[in-house]
Length: 368
Image 1 (spheres, helix red, strand yellow):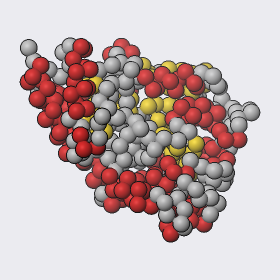
Image 2 (cartoon, one colour; image 1 turned 45 degrees about the horizontal axis):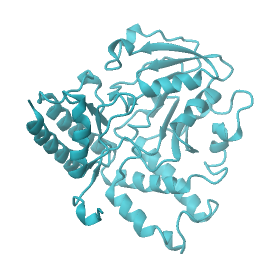
Image 3 (cartoon, rainbow, N blue to C red; image 1 turned 135 degrees about the horizontal axis):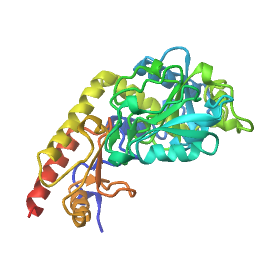
Image 4 (cartoon, rainbow, N blue to C red; image 1 turned 180 degrees about the vertical axis):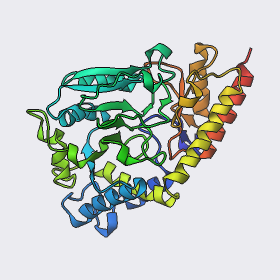
């Protein structure tokens, strides 16, 4: 029977989500678990109508506004559920008496968003990366955008295929919507370029059960007929995200993470650290004849580094030996297989360096 004494001193969690949280955040959450802010109870138990909890939510919103310099004409909403909820909520709220919406198809998660949007609208797939097997993006001048569309939706970072936009699409007067679930808060962003941004929390912010929505105020309040109350952004906007009991612990963890990001020096500093980590890992892959990544370098994800071995039979061997070395959850998504190292904000450089060292040792052992 394994005990904690049998484990490496430090375990690095490379999961795409639920993902690792900053150590300092975990330590603070642990210290406060039984007695939050001197209330004598856990934050899990306290009323969301209590002055302490309501103040925490307001402060969390302000910290997020500070990090992204969010303009005053945008709501910041803490919404139930995950990104899949937003696949429905976006068309329910943003069609606004129109019938068509543009979607950019760049891989697994954009396909999921398209599938759900088709329940409510005629979806125009204005761009598809299928020709490159979603390892690159077609040039914007080839996209078939509809100027009369209700909005344009794209997935900023595809966690499954490891592809990330390195630019913000130009959509003219048509509101731009993006799923930033896996790269939110990884770098600075001009919020004013977007109509709506959403991101589930369990990758780069908090634990699962919560989604952050940043939406331009003029886009709120014109839902499709029979939209449920809890799927209407206005419900959250008019009630400070506290219409009913929120996902209180994920929200609390989010508040701690926003503080932690500020303490790191803000998103400019975090972006530099993220670029350094992923660049080291891609360099190790590119310099090897054993590992390979097929995504066009320009569009390689900073957050989710996917790679394969020369023989698929070696993947389970790699995973087993990596786990013993304290490198966990490196298995690729079931839709594509292979391997994947997610190096979100909370992953320290030391974790990436240990992974690279392990990869080099494994390659030396198994190269033929």
